[in-house]
Figure 1 (spheres, rainbow, N blue to C red):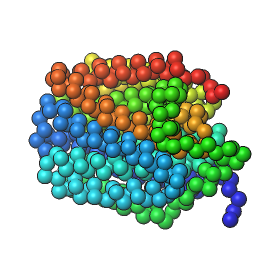
Figure 2: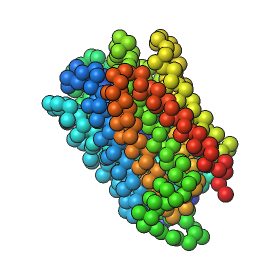
Figure 3: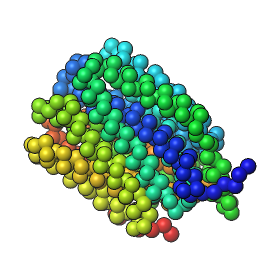
Length: 407
């Protein structure tokens, strides 16, 4: 067996293949980001004011993905990263067929449930594997390039599927796109991806293992450890921003008489900026620290969301989408890297899984809360105000609770 070496350059071929994996995972979720909300009324008869029913698919996605993140971290520590990755792609196979043959909105909700399983298993494994392969001082860079690849794909899929829907039947367009991406992901994960657990174990050289139960680690990360608690709540609250972009921005733009393609283009700016800037913010956090980027990113997202309903031009909406994307680029890879900073190596996979549980449970909390406030007020401005306030207050909590550096 060859000597195991850590580092991005030392393992560049496998890291590139892992980046292809997360790109395909991003394409899978990206195909639902702008098209599904836009088609809720035309294809499935949801009225423009049925906000709670509209948000149901994101609530289900968030709950399922959160649970799978939690399980994936533990399963990958016990059974290996590759097996979990392959299982995630197998689960995704029915999704395009369910969209194609959907007779009512419940089919879309069910397809989104499987999407949550896919994303929880596959996206988690791509980052865990790259953290295994990299050196310990490259966590920010690794998170940055991983999220860049994934969210660049989210942006591309949103625009491509919007154009496909514009030129062909909506369901056929999503089916063709989805089945190609999922089969590519499955085949490439089986034949090109290596198991990285040997690299993970070699990180632990000289460390006395104190493996704890999942329940014990969950309680520590979610309540007893105030630093991890602060980071986990920030991960949950930042989903208020992404839920707004996923659910309410397409509806908002349609209410302003923009076409689905025009709205998708604006939303894609958010995802492109988010994805691209993470190549800078990830490694930058390794040098200047995590907290300044997390807090600044939370506040920038809050201010960007607050500005959208008070402006009325495509140019300004595009700029604001870019500002929100910049905020997400500052906070997103940095939160994951910060959790890794404060996690013992022998339980890092599990603690990152707990973080991703709370982060993606934020989809459910955000979608349900935003849907309720929109339903109660029957005003699209209400969720913008609520999401903005949540981001700003959460950032303030991180500012107070998280040390500038690891002890």
